[in-house]
Length: 164
Image (tube, one colour):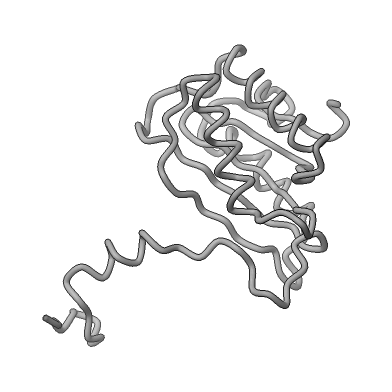
Protein backbone atom coordinates (compact mmCIF):
# COMPACT_ATOMS: atom_id res chain seq x y z
CA UNK A 1 0.00 0.00 0.00
CA UNK A 2 1.46 3.35 -1.03
CA UNK A 3 0.69 6.63 0.64
CA UNK A 4 1.32 10.23 -0.37
CA UNK A 5 3.72 12.01 1.90
CA UNK A 6 3.67 15.71 2.73
CA UNK A 7 6.59 16.40 0.43
CA UNK A 8 4.74 15.04 -2.59
CA UNK A 9 6.72 11.85 -2.94
CA UNK A 10 4.88 8.58 -3.09
CA UNK A 11 6.13 6.45 -0.28
CA UNK A 12 5.59 3.16 1.40
CA UNK A 13 4.45 3.45 5.05
CA UNK A 14 7.45 1.33 6.11
CA UNK A 15 9.99 3.06 3.84
CA UNK A 16 12.12 4.43 6.66
CA UNK A 17 12.37 1.12 8.49
CA UNK A 18 13.19 -0.83 5.34
CA UNK A 19 15.79 1.73 4.26
CA UNK A 20 17.61 1.55 7.58
CA UNK A 21 18.01 -2.20 7.33
CA UNK A 22 19.92 -2.04 4.09
CA UNK A 23 22.31 0.88 4.36
CA UNK A 24 25.04 0.39 1.77
CA UNK A 25 28.45 0.81 3.38
CA UNK A 26 30.90 -0.71 0.96
CA UNK A 27 32.10 1.67 -1.74
CA UNK A 28 31.22 1.17 -5.40
CA UNK A 29 33.47 -1.20 -7.33
CA UNK A 30 35.27 1.68 -9.07
CA UNK A 31 36.47 3.03 -5.69
CA UNK A 32 39.75 1.70 -4.30
CA UNK A 33 39.23 1.74 -0.50
CA UNK A 34 42.99 1.76 0.08
CA UNK A 35 43.19 5.15 -1.67
CA UNK A 36 40.16 6.70 0.02
CA UNK A 37 39.49 7.98 3.52
CA UNK A 38 36.17 7.30 5.22
CA UNK A 39 34.61 9.17 8.14
CA UNK A 40 32.85 6.95 10.68
CA UNK A 41 30.43 7.63 13.48
CA UNK A 42 29.45 4.66 15.64
CA UNK A 43 26.68 5.22 18.15
CA UNK A 44 25.77 3.32 21.29
CA UNK A 45 22.35 1.80 21.85
CA UNK A 46 21.84 3.91 24.95
CA UNK A 47 22.42 7.57 24.14
CA UNK A 48 23.15 10.40 26.57
CA UNK A 49 25.12 8.27 29.03
CA UNK A 50 28.87 7.99 29.39
CA UNK A 51 29.82 4.46 28.41
CA UNK A 52 33.03 5.11 26.46
CA UNK A 53 34.99 7.81 28.28
CA UNK A 54 36.48 5.65 30.99
CA UNK A 55 40.19 4.74 30.99
CA UNK A 56 39.59 0.97 30.94
CA UNK A 57 37.08 1.16 28.07
CA UNK A 58 39.27 3.60 26.13
CA UNK A 59 42.20 1.23 26.52
CA UNK A 60 40.25 -1.63 24.90
CA UNK A 61 39.08 0.58 22.05
CA UNK A 62 42.50 2.10 21.37
CA UNK A 63 44.43 -1.17 21.66
CA UNK A 64 42.01 -3.05 19.43
CA UNK A 65 42.15 -0.28 16.82
CA UNK A 66 45.95 -0.49 16.87
CA UNK A 67 45.84 -4.30 16.63
CA UNK A 68 43.59 -4.12 13.57
CA UNK A 69 45.99 -1.58 12.11
CA UNK A 70 49.01 -3.86 12.68
CA UNK A 71 47.03 -6.64 10.97
CA UNK A 72 46.60 -4.23 8.02
CA UNK A 73 42.82 -4.43 8.16
CA UNK A 74 42.64 -0.65 8.22
CA UNK A 75 44.64 2.52 8.71
CA UNK A 76 43.09 4.89 11.25
CA UNK A 77 44.76 8.33 11.51
CA UNK A 78 42.38 9.48 14.28
CA UNK A 79 39.98 7.85 16.72
CA UNK A 80 38.06 10.00 19.21
CA UNK A 81 35.73 8.78 21.92
CA UNK A 82 32.74 10.74 23.08
CA UNK A 83 30.59 9.57 26.00
CA UNK A 84 28.02 7.84 23.75
CA UNK A 85 29.68 7.57 20.33
CA UNK A 86 33.00 7.30 18.55
CA UNK A 87 34.39 9.15 15.52
CA UNK A 88 37.25 7.96 13.37
CA UNK A 89 38.77 8.22 9.93
CA UNK A 90 39.86 5.04 8.17
CA UNK A 91 41.15 3.62 4.94
CA UNK A 92 41.16 -0.07 4.12
CA UNK A 93 43.35 -2.46 2.18
CA UNK A 94 41.97 -3.82 -1.08
CA UNK A 95 41.62 -7.38 0.20
CA UNK A 96 39.21 -6.62 3.07
CA UNK A 97 35.59 -5.60 3.06
CA UNK A 98 35.28 -2.44 5.13
CA UNK A 99 31.86 -3.39 6.50
CA UNK A 100 33.31 -6.64 7.84
CA UNK A 101 36.26 -4.88 9.47
CA UNK A 102 34.06 -2.34 11.27
CA UNK A 103 31.58 -5.06 12.31
CA UNK A 104 34.40 -7.25 13.60
CA UNK A 105 35.90 -4.36 15.59
CA UNK A 106 32.51 -3.51 17.08
CA UNK A 107 31.95 -7.17 18.00
CA UNK A 108 35.38 -7.44 19.63
CA UNK A 109 35.00 -4.22 21.62
CA UNK A 110 31.47 -5.18 22.60
CA UNK A 111 32.68 -8.49 24.02
CA UNK A 112 35.77 -7.12 25.76
CA UNK A 113 34.50 -3.77 27.03
CA UNK A 114 30.79 -4.60 27.37
CA UNK A 115 29.86 -1.87 24.88
CA UNK A 116 26.37 -2.02 23.41
CA UNK A 117 26.71 -0.51 19.95
CA UNK A 118 23.82 0.32 17.70
CA UNK A 119 23.48 -2.32 15.01
CA UNK A 120 24.58 -0.06 12.18
CA UNK A 121 26.95 2.88 11.77
CA UNK A 122 27.32 6.03 9.71
CA UNK A 123 30.09 6.29 7.16
CA UNK A 124 30.99 8.89 4.56
CA UNK A 125 33.71 8.72 1.91
CA UNK A 126 35.64 11.97 1.78
CA UNK A 127 35.39 13.39 -1.72
CA UNK A 128 36.94 16.18 -3.73
CA UNK A 129 37.60 19.19 -1.56
CA UNK A 130 36.75 17.42 1.70
CA UNK A 131 40.22 17.23 3.17
CA UNK A 132 41.06 14.69 5.83
CA UNK A 133 42.79 17.40 7.88
CA UNK A 134 39.58 19.43 8.01
CA UNK A 135 37.66 16.31 9.04
CA UNK A 136 40.28 15.63 11.74
CA UNK A 137 39.77 19.16 13.04
CA UNK A 138 36.01 18.58 13.04
CA UNK A 139 36.49 15.36 15.02
CA UNK A 140 38.92 16.97 17.49
CA UNK A 141 36.52 19.86 18.13
CA UNK A 142 33.63 17.48 18.96
CA UNK A 143 34.19 17.48 22.77
CA UNK A 144 34.65 21.27 22.67
CA UNK A 145 31.35 21.75 20.79
CA UNK A 146 29.67 19.44 23.31
CA UNK A 147 30.90 21.64 26.17
CA UNK A 148 33.00 18.87 27.73
CA UNK A 149 36.31 20.78 27.54
CA UNK A 150 37.57 24.23 26.63
CA UNK A 151 40.20 23.17 24.07
CA UNK A 152 40.63 19.92 22.21
CA UNK A 153 44.19 19.38 23.48
CA UNK A 154 42.72 18.66 26.93
CA UNK A 155 40.59 15.71 25.72
CA UNK A 156 42.19 12.43 26.91
CA UNK A 157 40.05 10.10 24.79
CA UNK A 158 41.66 10.57 21.39
CA UNK A 159 44.25 8.48 19.59
CA UNK A 160 46.40 10.02 16.86
CA UNK A 161 49.25 8.34 14.91
CA UNK A 162 51.87 10.19 16.97
CA UNK A 163 50.35 8.55 20.07
CA UNK A 164 51.62 5.17 18.87
